[in-house]
Length: 265
Image: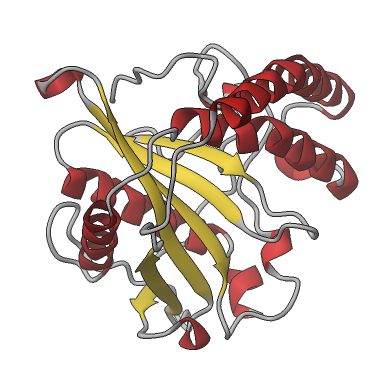
């Protein structure tokens, strides 16, 4: 279990234990299931050469958006829980879509506020290399991810996973938490419109999170038809390679949970 040093103002509220969780809740399919072929994933680091920190005005707008969205999102999830119960999978799809859209009004500016300092290109490259290594079954959290295979281009992939930011928070030793954020978008082998249906979370309070014992998992952007991509982060203490290992576990669970959708089966 890791210690999260982020302020409540910048962390997506569904990721805080004291509030309702919007976490991945669909049970993972068994790895190595008969007939299940690994899906191609292209891992790359975002090009950060021209990156610049958000301006004071951008940060001000993002913080105001957080304040405006927090109460509205909480009220919506509370109301839908009362109407439909705690089992996210049993909610009508149009109601789940309401939650995803509301969550993005909070998560999108939260990302700007938390990752307010640009990374060096070598940092993003390092985390991308560590992620590829852990997916291939090497390094920390070793054990090949049977549902994933690394492919050389985005055209060969079902999913493109782009390392977009990382951040270290804390003083030293066990009081440091490291975060790696990725953007997941459609690769060339994924059918049009599929990513918008990707299941990333449940809104029910107390929903079991299969990631808890691997480290933190927070969603900043849920896929929608208008913006069909996901942004999420993984976190852990210790080393950057450890956090990449946690991220690899999260990515494998995400793919297993959505395997039928992503593979077209």
